[in-house]
Image (cartoon, rainbow, N blue to C red; front, side, top):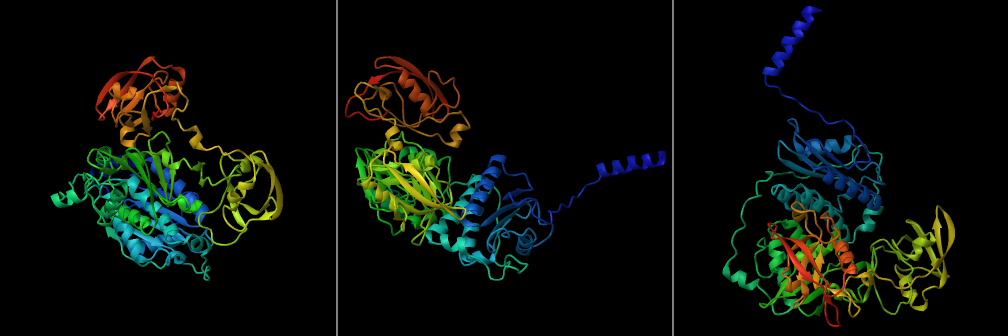
Length: 561
């Protein structure tokens, strides 16, 4: 026993002093079919892993596609193309779909290589030329900027956006291989790409020529500014100091980079679509026409423009703080900004925005995006709707409403022209193979815009701010959501010295924590015109100020909060 202990001790010393080479190995099988992000390098922050897993779950649920991200320390001497195909089959990526609809992103840390593998039944939808673009223009570019978040999430978003842009949603849902019993899930072809993590993070962008700077300067009209901005996308312009961008947008771009793939995707998404201009004072919105279908409307992003003394500029800063993009769709996440006038003719709800064309009541049923066919339709209820309150559920199959067979998406919205709030109608759905009659009491047209915080009553407290959400890089310095988008000329906010770009991080009653718009709104409700209060401000992410503001009195014609 003593000899054994001595031998063990000396063996331990040898191991401690000698260089150790550890060869690691991946599991032969997928560790969990309820996870979609596997990071064996521990490079990703936990919240990003959670986000990728959430996206993976959503993609499989809604599109029947198994999308896996795998990051490994090394390929252990293997070639990445063949190793990706091997892992694709070993981990049975796509097995739980109706066909062989898997996608694997493999990133090898030591070899600095990327490979995307696509299952058999997705090869027509995601051909090699597209996969190569994604590898180069999304993953490679963002990883060379040391940005895992946008590298992965923007890639996932682009895969989804392609389905809608190419009108392939139903095709991918219905795809199923006739050779499902074949043991291979992909053909293992295609190229890989090499990257240098963080290699481009600190490199400056080449200077733009004076002629091009003038060309991409402020424009005479919002329409011309929109067209110039689209030209920057088409030309893959990286210079965000051009005067086509508003001053606050230039500040935003100091902290936020985009990839050539994103610029290409944005340009292609807008190409060939009709846009109209809605203008109010120095603000303008270039957006889809009013007669655009409900589904198409939320797939055509609006663009915000602001006028300076020099002309019209695109306001990317406000867009980034008030619009949430997800795949092909957009949604308003803030309504305290100066561009809400463009949406006054819409009933704004959680999932869709409904054009008001004489409707007097609201039911609240949504349909799959761009579903082709004449029904019956799989539906979902709006979050705060009579349909949901009455018991209509996700994945119910809609048969009829008030005795009328539904053959077109949003036919029910057109029907609301002949009903009044309080009317009771019967909705017939099929659930679990059985028809079910659900009585629903219709609601009045209550829009999120009705809760919009512009004061409307004469004599209400008024300060003249426009607000939006703060950016992640701002919240790293101060835990605050309340970002000043603009201050109205001649308002109490301007007279107190507040400026666009200020972050208000403390208001009376907020206790200096995670200050948001509702903290400010509650403060206003407690105050009266003529009263004074002090607000704490972070300016230019460096200077801390405490400014006194005297609450003003709202009168017709005044704007802001």
